Image (tube, rainbow, N blue to C red):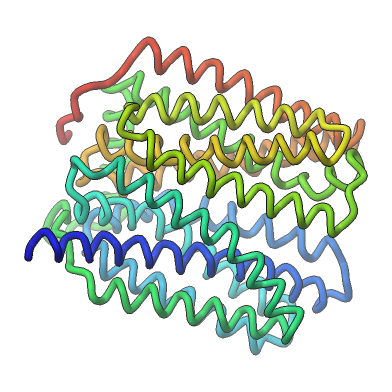
Length: 405
């Protein structure tokens, strides 16, 4: 009975992840269209949306970890889902751009906190011996959203309106909330409520992260290099539409097909991951997946036609399924769950700064030269970082889970 209940809980968590992933894609596409229409087809208005998310992450992640490790993660996840639901509901009835931007900020802020809050919960919910296997299936759950979300958005927007697509996102988030309510709490709270001032607690937590990073230098270096690779993927992705149109000459339908191929690549990589993951260590999945992803990006960046671009996005999407699963498992294996919220939040605040900076750098290169040069520069930097990541992974494999500081 216990084994059956455990499996049901794991499957329930995967279904919640799939619902949220599909909803995220519905939200992204529908929101872009709503803002584009509301702003009388001004591209600059849509560009602002891509600045709000990293800005919200930067603001929230610098302190959110201090709260995450001191609260019941399941209850916090439910609260964050609720904030996103009410925020999206507000967007449906919003009548001005500034109202939408404010609501987008709150939804983005809740999303920024959700990731470092959910991983400690999943780490406690799933048995240690099943972490890598669960993360392999999680890649499929995320991939299903990658494929189904844009397709559903196209159908709902085409047959109805942007508001209907946003409403469907609310339904999916409600389903995720119901599942989270049914799941048990996992007692991984670091400490009892403290009477200390939050400013003092926040400073102590930053000292803890700094001390941890200094004590486990190679672990920290490995995670930071992978974060830099993630930063480069985000910066390159921000120019993907312009590159596909200007450098390769793809039409809108062709670009839509390219996105679908990327989704198929991610699902294919995820399915392969579930078969072969037990034969690899998490650090190998991380390093080799990142290497394959970088090669796929380089192939895409130097593509001259649809065929080579399709091969590039298929390879990079499939490889990133391996890299992401390896990254999550590696964190679970080497960062104490009691510190995970703070570590992830504070590392992600650094990542947000780098994303904003690198996006600006590539935009500057685009202005000085052209979009192809900007994307190719970003992908070559990514490939160089991947070589460094593979070297680090070969030289140091951290076996022992660090003790709590």
